Length: 57
Length: 135
Figure 1 (cartoon, rainbow over the protein chains, first blue to last red):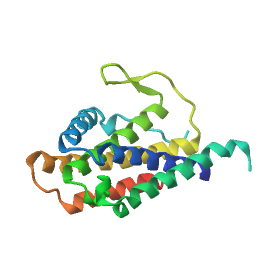
Figure 2: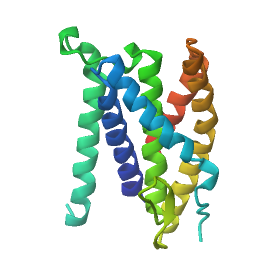
Figure 3: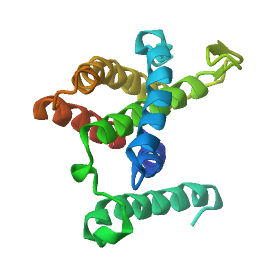
Figure 4: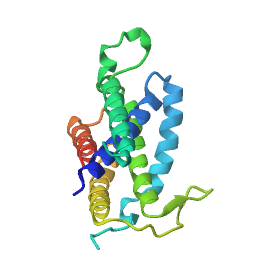
């Protein structure tokens, strides 16, 4: 597998993880609750069984 | 160094920088108001986990040609050509997200009931996030 592709995927997750962390870091409980409700509503729509299968062609 | 690798190198360096910032939060003075993940309340952790899951899910959808409509539903808009390497990574990502989904539901169930979540469930979710990162 192409190493640069793996690095890129890892880098993307690290950045996304950091930004998700910053969305809750240092917030008041009310602000955290607002973000929580927003993420949870989207989570309910994000069923992993509905993701496309991508077996090697 | 080849020009086409520059965006990847920059992104990796940024990722290390961000990961370092997250890792160093515990060393910052408490006055900064920013907590280490391990010091977050269960609800803050749950919010962070939901956010990581949602962004990984959205990334998988986007790479396979889907986008959110105005009602927040996923709609197929294109059929992107994917290399075999990419297809394999996306398949692994789907498998990890399928494992993560019920664990987050369990973790979140504790939050809804106002009960402290199981440490074991929390660790399993963090392990999957780490595996996603090392894909």
